[in-house]
Image: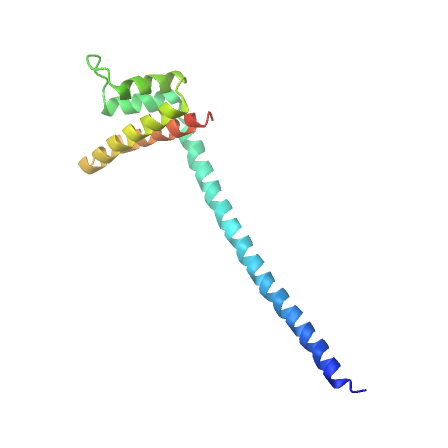
Length: 135
């Protein structure tokens, strides 16, 4: 009986299994590295969110009102939604509408170069998004 073809087949199978294992290991390590990068990004988002939430809700509204004073003579949809946001009674659908209005206002403020106003609107946008998820 000639053992050479059998030994060659066994060596080929072992090399193939090792090669597949090595390739899978490299792929798995790449996936793990991607998850670690995502986790670090989420930690950064959590720290930024925590810092912004350190500010009291009323402080965010005061900052916003410094740049955009409330005019009692004209009660707009945005004013009504902001009042509901301040009271904590806003619905997720209303949060979506308020987000649209605030993003439009933020774009206008950015175009005008009013970075303080952009920051104030950004704080309210964060509060709006968090309120939509009842967080």
